Image 1 (cartoon, rainbow, N blue to C red):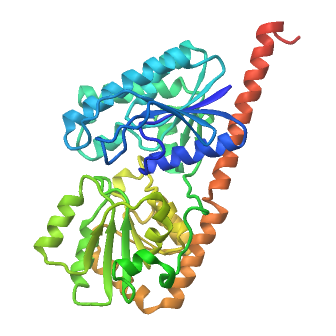
Image 2 (cartoon, rainbow, N blue to C red):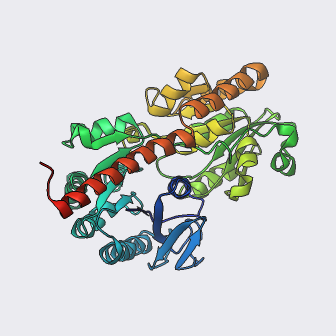
Length: 419
């Protein structure tokens, strides 16, 4: 039995889904499982980069499938990239899967489980549907797709069909799992397995030892960070309102790291408002991630409330690993807000509460001991609840059960059913 991970991006790509999938795949390979990853030949933010078609990385076989490389700059090009990857994934599964294999199918590109369901079934393998972003609901909630339109209805029907063909559906939050079971999927098929962060790769770096903080001229500042994707699922209006309100405080600096669909718009607002207290930096390479996340004294994490059942911001787990408080902007009863409140590792505000966010920032700046305790609490909840070790143990247990089931099934096919 081999485990096949299917996701459009894989190591060395540093996008959120790639880091999650790659980390788990490498960990399972180290534990003795035969693991293969299928992905595209491009990087998330660099469609002009062509990665090798196949290679062995840390004992794991990576098969990078052909697909067009128009990139993320326009919707039509992205749709063609999706379509060609779907076709390549269908053909790869049809030609390469074997009886008893476990194919862990992720949600980039959307509906990949639909494309791969039939070849997985024909090859008598089994599918684990790892739902990181719930499509088409994300598109519907963002107004990109009508839930009453034919494409919207059809997308949901075929998605649910593919889930019913799965041996297991993995959700990162109980909210998403509840949504799926309330919409007709069997309870015993849906499992909650939280996202995580690698506490060895990301760890607290003191300000005085942080070379990035020094290089960026932030040594004497209280730094409010945002790190990751500037996507449609995230609110930036509240952050920018707080930045305006605090623009006269020379001790506070906003540090925005990453890229994505909304970054240009955020940069334009910062220019138009002449906000000298906001600086932008590109997403940092993997070897700098501990310093990058530790460069901030507190991090803003946001999620539009209507997407709580669709997405969890994976950047949150990196903030926990870096031992920094979280300032969450979104649903006060959502997944991140609940963890922040129960672990006492930050604060939460609703979208539009820029003044309240600004007040929390000032309070944290002026209370270094309290802020330090929140950081310790953040790292503690990472180590006890959201660690990579916990996640890998849970996934390994699942794979051992599948392996045992495959062995029993194989024996039955040879000797006939047990009396």
